[in-house]
Image (cartoon, rainbow, N blue to C red; front, side):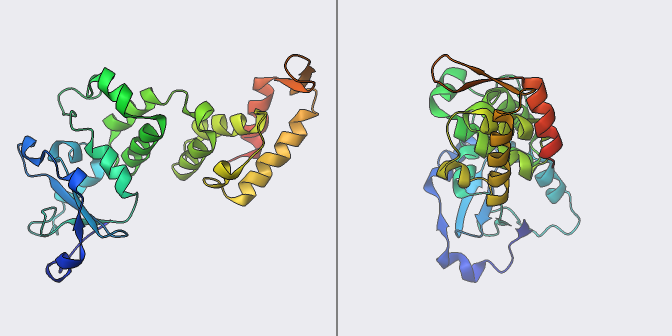
Length: 238
């Protein structure tokens, strides 16, 4: 991320995200304005949310910080993430420094509003911005994420060196009945997919890891998960 300078002449080419500017008056301090450089969209995140970020706190304490940086006329330019990621972060408007991480959301409303993909987005954004409390909250919502979204979790874990999640997600991709497909290819590169496909074949015929059982299908496998985890840890490193 970097500070945007000479923004005056560029303002006409930029757009403001209405979803990320609603309820700005609810914040006692002016919200922090960010410029998503890839899309040219400027949006606002409440100050109390941004203060959860170690990255942002370092920025505002920097001796060479520009006057007015983070205002609508001089937004902070960022390159990582997507506008949707920040829309989700903006929705954490019930967040406050006094109640994190125990009860920052209305649980019933949040359960209806946020999907597992939403929480994965919040989780990855929190890692990039070093929002430890938000990260802890997201983790509590994502305990089953490696099983439900293994390819997406594997990508996030690989990007942020999260070994436990990475191996759990790879195990799900290795042992599931469904073949690897286009959805997996959206998140994982071809070399990793080929490595997973190779292990799927290897463990299917390894008596130390799998055994046949005749229940739902003529060829079902029961896995020795300890043996499978050891195999995955040896073969898939970060």
